[in-house]
Length: 118
Image (cartoon, rainbow, N blue to C red):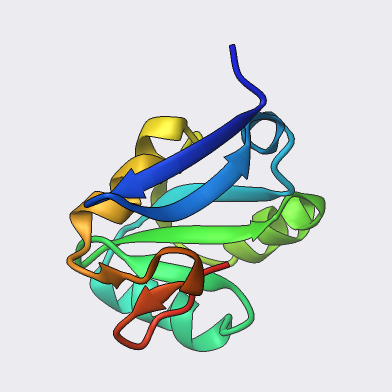
């Protein structure tokens, strides 16, 4: 067991996170499968206040604060979708975000190449 997790890529520190943050996250992430591409695009166009990531022509990752869960469900009730599955936040998925993307990390100075490091 550990309290703090540090991720190092290519010998450079890229992130440190507290283990408790994995259990007590204030955000939720869901995969929503819409019935059509047009329905997904309508959702994105009409709900720009949500953070979304397209996965397939009909699938969308939807990130939102845990406190607004009921609002999100009420909003989705106005759209045709076939799936609404929670994506569990895991250490593996967090770790892989640093290795899937080809970014240059500047250690404690952050990510080089346009993105920022929190």
